[in-house]
Amino acid sequence: MERKTQVTAAEGRQDLTITRTFDLPLELLFKAYEDPEIVAQWMGTKVLKLENRKHGGYQFETYDPKGNIAFKANGSIHEFVTNEKITRTFEMENSAFGVTLEFLEFESLTADTSKLTMHVIYRSAAHRDENLKLPFDYGVNMAHNRLQEILNPLK
Amino acid sequence: MTAGAIAANFDTARPTVSKHLSILTECELLQQEQNGREIFYHLNAKNMKEIADFIEPFRQLWDDRFNKLEAIMKNYKPKN
Image (cartoon, rainbow over all chains, first blue to last red):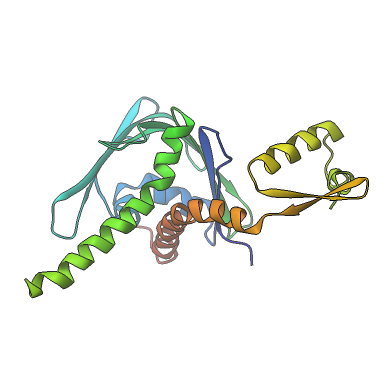
């Protein structure tokens, strides 16, 4: 079975492409990017600002289960065409991969299905690889936290 | 497969395919095997898997995120 989410990241390049097909009409897919309340739900983040227009900006704040700020993200919107495309920058504060330029393209496949193509450009190939590694570090952190939880009562 | 058989699957010029093959061999993603006058190329499955494994957690992260988006939007009722 073909995977719904695919990542293409050629060796030595400073970009990557994420594609995803959705069992959703194009309008609903786009709404999930446009409506701050919905963005907050699926990204699991607090949306402080989301200005969907040329020269607009956005700001997210994500909390860990204890209520501490896990990370802050922000960016500028360069292009915003409803049901078609969003061009924006993205920055996760204090991350090793720096600021990225993102081209999001939304297309309708059938009346009930749609596709998103995200082309992400990094400052360098090394910055891109740092981002690819992020879930590894996250996974290791989660494992450490879990280990600590298990070991704490034994202290 | 021989370089010729591989090249037959692409519209790209034969020298371009050869160049790709030599880079993939250099990265140890392909293995060469001399058989008489011909060179056969084999996939190095182990190293291919390492590359896939490197990207997989990142893909998984986005897959989870998008699954969530899809589930939320399937239950979406427009506000009137």
